[in-house]
Image 1 (tube, one colour):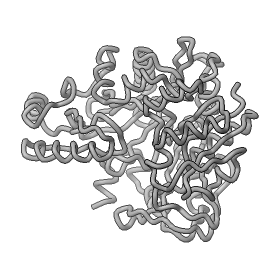
Image 2 (tube, helix red, strand yellow):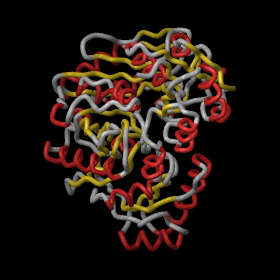
Image 3 (tube, one colour):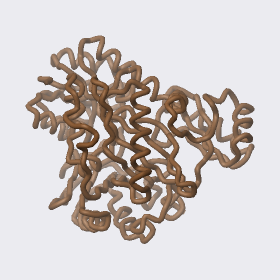
Image 4 (cartoon, one colour):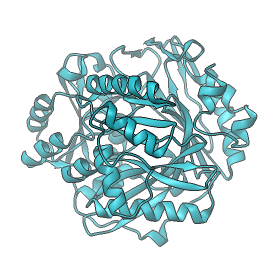
Length: 448
């Protein structure tokens, strides 16, 4: 097992990884920007190294500085967390070239799956159902119009790189497709340095369902159940739950089979998530993309499987085989996660950074909080607005909702405005409680 790991990330995920390292007797090295010098992960790390100023390109995206810190601290491995360099194949190659283990998939798998166009082509080869659309990147507006008129409107314009809803547009006719493509390309170029886009049929009445997989270096790929991530604001996830309440066990098994098949086709190892769009009208799932990293919402899978995904990541990275088979994976109860952000949700979810004057996290049976914040902590303006993740686990979805309502009521954060009020409203909404919604639910009902 590794003796010392560098955590190349910040916030709650850096703290999450650090805590598993502690349980395993592994020393942690946390790199940080000057804006994060007072973060909880920095305070608890065995070693903390400043790698630059607040701007991400000069710190958390600065490969040279991170590698220098890794060599200075003499680490065995680097865990990239999620975001920043987590899905950067070049970073993975540099880490390995420096004789340091990269805790994630091989760069070849990142290359094959990190680009939406290439990933879709691989899915087709693996006989995994895909949304009808362009065979690859659309060359120009004329090419996009040709594809759209072949498959029919509405269509989704999607940047092949990145995520988080950036570089995505919906078009209902030729005019909106032409303008939307140019807009999406510009946003993708600015956000990811890659303007390439693909065109797909837009599944209007859909749920967003994903399968967590874990794969070792011995040919074992195991599905760890599904997560329903359909509560979204402009394609950005707000709530995740496991299992999905809208699919049958047979459909869940088929999705899991398809996810495993795709991972094997890509030569994938370590943790990853295969995302599907599920058409409620046709009762059919289609491959969307694969995230080649640990996900923000991984705790819901941990709650229903009683597994530590970070520990599994570390063990797989050392070459150990997975300690269980697919048949030995068991699922218990229902888990739900909400993201608590420093945002004014009543004002278009505008970021609201600042100092937290009071912080009291909920606790009790079935309640988990993953957060790096505390009373007196100043939320920086330079990064995302996440304060933490609130996760509950109950014997049923109904009980999990009950636990979530109580936990939200007990969560006290004073100083910045937060999304707690939004979630309190959501978890009392009849459509959510009855799971009678699709991915447009929040945009249609809450953001008018």
